[in-house]
Length: 112
Length: 115
Image (tube, one colour):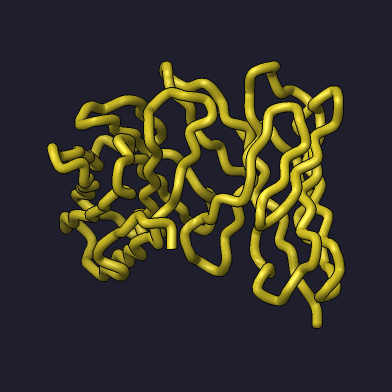
């Protein structure tokens, strides 16, 4: 029951910006978009999240469209260590709390 | 390093056995979440505890149970193990329980192999 759609795989050259798209056309007004990544079989690593405004931190930038139906994660200067599966997640209300519903993600490969 | 610790890293056991996975949340975090990641199912939410109380229950089998102790560490108990229970089990923690901006930070996981 993932609420997001991502391309299964992408390639990017080292040193270039990696732009990972995500569609979340059924997102509700108060639901946040979260991005995590998973390198090999390590625990998912939090990257960034946002509601409606663009966000930036030391890892990445998140651009959310005005209608909130899609977003793009930008890794400004990709390195080989950024090779991972990237998950775009919309937090959904669940039993009075929130839960993360992981889809299949995008397998990003950074090429030298 | 997220600050969430999990033990053991690897666990190999036989069908029908029972195992316990342990998780220590980040300092100050009150919520603990358990997730299962198998090859065919992806990452699935199992259960959440907040300050010692069960908060939300996901796709957790009846053979599985969890608890959170007064020191806030959590244990996931898996019994009557089957081959299909082989998976990575991740624990995550967050400050609170229900706030929509409450970020979950994941531990390194426990790889369970049932033979």
